[in-house]
Length: 308
Image (spheres, rainbow, N blue to C red):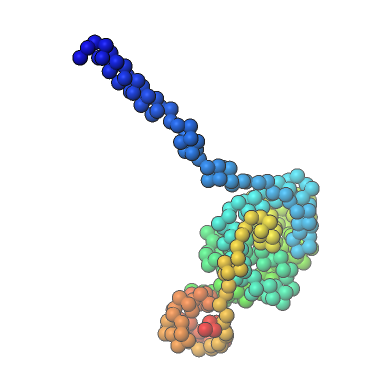
């Protein structure tokens, strides 16, 4: 091969190689453009954490919340933000509220308690069957001593803290007694958390007579504001970004009452007579804590049976 031909061949190879590597290092602008992330798929561009505007008419049982006080405003905003942006928990509370509020509302009216206190029950237990670390149980989270003091039957076999109708009656009695003592539904709600004596002592020591003026234990400081936040969010769910259909909400199965004044030696077998298994029976009668009803005193109990 002639030298001139060899030179041309080498030049050709060099040019082709340069073009190839250049194409790798600098991709076509169209390809590069198409490979950029779509802004609509980027969470930080579509998900917004917004500050919330506090309603001016916030109240608990008709008692106004003085949000013009900076400390009160900050505490209210805290609970509203926490319960709005803890979305999974918020949506579950909305679902459960639809299940149990229809039971609580007529009971609260019957026992003379303002309707807003259904949100206190929700704040206490979240409408789930769990015992607190301190031993409080049931929808209204009564301690054993308090429940017994107000007439609930509480033992290993029967625990009426889990009986919705009976525990609601006791909660109403307790809260109305506190309201009469403090002349305030707001302080009555605080006393449900800290106790009547605890609230009285703090008010006396600090020479104040208002929940919003008192310095209270941390949990009680947040307690009333959490009730208020749940009231606001559940009353206006779409305003706070909760989107759901009616079919998404929980409902309670219809039941009928049968009265029993005898021993039930085996609840599993008893439930089968009514077309239920043990678990179904306990869902509707959680106050029966064992697989039997001792009933040595021949007391009359009301047991709920689902209407199939």
